[in-house]
Length: 294
Image (cartoon, rainbow, N blue to C red):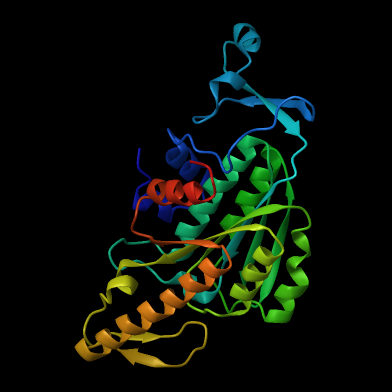
């Protein structure tokens, strides 16, 4: 089943989005699973679509007449970090899908990544960059951690600017062990303190994956002639679109993201461009394939 635009717009219930998106999606976040030493039983939880059948406790099914899955704690050296750009530009709405903006789409995609990490038994945490500051949900494992992350994602709103460079530099201590970092942003500012932080994390040998979210209108210059746009983060610079302005906009946009892609390639950061009008399953599958989960 596809996650409908109406469903994505209601990201206050991210559990519902996860159930729709992950149904039938067999990908993990990284290839391989650790077995044997270091894998210990933790708790039971109710079966959810997408769980592996081999983890169902069949003896418990016979007694309780319900499916339960065995949760395991494992010694893993990989932590999964969800990096969310919550600056004001992420409130940019879709022109064709009512009630959908870039932040809502990013929250839905990252929630699905968190669900896969939890299913794999990985530790995962959340970094939210917006309003000029950084908010953390420390990495941990298990269903309770999943609810903490979903709660923070649901509370997050697009506001202000990205944190300054010194704030981000001082915040990189979160990635002490080898980490897989999924960063969702529109990357309209590049280079920027955020891009410098992600490049630094890659130089620290963390595995960084960037998801660049745009709207159809942003990609195609599909703004009505005479329509006005003002930079939401700077509060200045009113632009009006006509045929000549659109041609200049498309060239500048192409140059901007070509430079971003080149910087990412040089640092071995794989970036994926996506439109928020695309089905989440399609984008999520492509992003996980980049991370080695295909």
